[in-house]
Image (cartoon, rainbow, N blue to C red; front, side, top):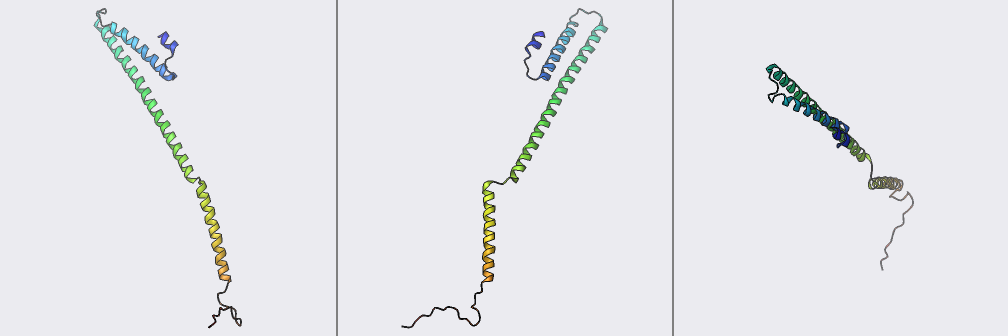
Amino acid sequence: MIAYVAVNPHIDRKRTLVEIFNEMALMVAMYHLAGWNGLIDDPTTNFDMGYSFIGLLLVTLTINIGVIVYRTVEQWRHKRAVDLSRRLVLEQLKDVKTVDQIEAEKKAIRQKIRDEFIKKRMTEASPLPAKGKSGKRNQVSDS
């Protein structure tokens, strides 16, 4: 047990503590099993050892299952936070305009200004000549 603690084989401290607890529970369980090899003649002491052994197993299982549930919930929360962060980034990327979109918008604005200018010039210009003035006409000579 001392060598296990000194080597520290796990990176996560919580896992190391759970493994140390499991090793200690296993050692205590082995001492309980030694009580049933016929060394203890009193039946009430044997039953008490059995209840103690069952209690030890229940405590060990409860702690281990609790650790599993805690880690599962922790992973679920982390995965959800990453997913929400990813969604937020994707939504922000939708709002960001690319260079092509910016150029297309500039081109559309220039085209709109040009169209308005042409429309204005066309409404200002009169297609008919003014009164009393004859417009230039091409006359074809009959030769």
